[in-house]
Structure formats: C-alpha cells, structure tokens
Image (cartoon, rainbow, N blue to C red; front, side, top):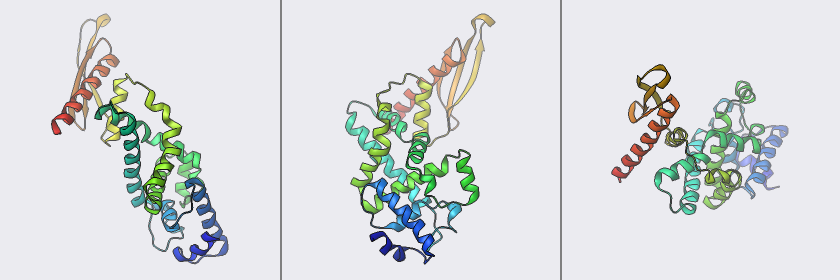
Length: 256
C-alpha cells in the first residue's frame, strides 16, 4: 500500500502497532480530503498539538502552530474569494462581516467535531482532558493547521474544495441573514480583525426615574468610536455601535 511504503520515509521507526496508528490517521485524512496525499509528514504535523510533540512520530519535535498560522490565512483567502465573487454589490465593511460569519471559532469547532479531529490528534493527557471538558482552541487550531497542510501538499484547488465542502456550503444560510443588530455587526467586525471586544460605557444619565435617558460611548482598543443616546441602555448601545461602524467605514475610505 502507498501509505505503508512512505511511513518509513517520514517518521521515526516505531513498532508495527504504532505504525498502524499512523496509517489509520493518514487513511482518515485521505477520506476527508477526497484524494491521495503526497506528503504524510505535513498531516501528522497538523495533528500534533504542542502538548503532544513527545508522543508524535515526527522526527523533529515540532507542533502544528506554524501550519495553523498558514491555514488561518488560507481559510480567510478562500472565504474572501467566495464572498467577493458572490456579493458584487456589497462594500468592504459588509463583506468583512459576512466573512466573519464563516471564519470564527464556533464554525471551526463544529467542523472539528464533524470530522472527529479529536480522535486523530497527538496530545498529552491534560490537553485530552481539556478537549473533553469543552476547550475550543485545540480543536479549532487543528482545523486551521489541517487546512495549511492540504494547501502545501495539494495546492489551492484542493484546499478550496475542502473549505467549500466542510465550511462554506454547510453554513451558506449565514450569508442570507440581514443583521440589524449593530452591536452584533460591530462584534463580528472586530473579531474578524482580531481586535479587542467593544467596550460600552454609560457616560451620561439624565432625566427622572420614569423617563431616563442614557448616553453610551463604545471604544475599541481604548479608542472611542461611537456615542449613542436612548431611553434604555440597550438602545443607547445599539446607536453607539451603529455610529462606530460608520466611523470605521470612514476610516477605511480615507485610508484608500
């Protein structure tokens, strides 16, 4: 078998039982990708969490963090390309919000669970317990690392099909939702840019108890971007978020 022949080329010599565990992982990966793989080393690296470098069959003590970094960029590119080609009338701000609906931890966690990534990872007991307890980051990072491995091994067309199959198509309904929740829109935007979450502060409260008026300011990374006033704090926060979105769009327009 092809996989059996190349095991010894890429990995430390191990007992046959361990070789079977490697072979099992590679066969599972081929089924997920839908084609023969060329470089099994990349996929085992993608499945090696930093806690599991000592139990991984890799010759070098290396984790999946570099592949995760690459996979994150590849995922953003594929999703951006899809949104850019499908939504020709949307501006940059709205396209960013649409992209963030696909590229977020909850979506990637669902993908990891669907692919049963936890069964394939090389992790220590503490990390395995963290996964069982609901830790997201290990599984999310491994999906991005796998995407990076597919891209390096098989190229853009194959990784594009993989992302379309497991991430975009199952969540296609997300792009049809017109979100008028400005706080939600702002949060999606800052998460897509990996900024700190918006911070809302009541800067003024006036009027009698039965007819209060609240003024709220929203800041991102310590910078005030919007102010809104309303009869409730929630209404004021929504208006502040809306102004913040408009402020961000102006900043983007001026930077072009």
